[in-house]
Image 1 (spheres, rainbow, N blue to C red):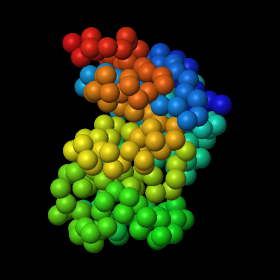
Image 2 (tube, one colour):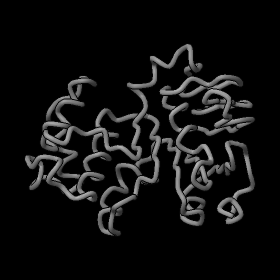
Image 3 (cartoon, rainbow, N blue to C red):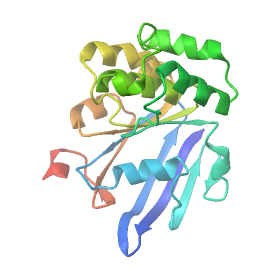
Length: 215
């Protein structure tokens, strides 16, 4: 069954075309790699898939929800890990996760489970402002999977992580999670190696996948 179906998707910012003629199908449990240089439209595509931006033309269907009409269905089913961690800096990691848990009707035991899973049990009560970028990324990953989403939208999810931390997060946000994933990355070889489907973008339009995307 298709988790994502895009047909000639288009998104604009005023007169500027951010995405145009983007078509792709991703089945449940698969990983889509989205590749391209800076400004190619990768993050815009993720935000459309999350229901955060409205498509201006074409068709977009995510987890059975037609966008934009049914985007209200997505928050309970989608986990988003972007450039911004979506954490309150003055609160502790535990407080942040408990806040998001309540939004999704998730119990505190799930928070404790994830803090342990990302290796944050000993730093869980430190304010986020006092944590390194790597530890903040671990918390952001825990937040993204807190409600056990069916689909993960991941924008450079291994940013600021050393190899040990990246391995620690693999069961939560990697292929080992078994979730449907859309993975934005500058690492062409790595992303292709862990994906089932790939799409390259250049200036918002489909392009060949490979190093030419960055020239």
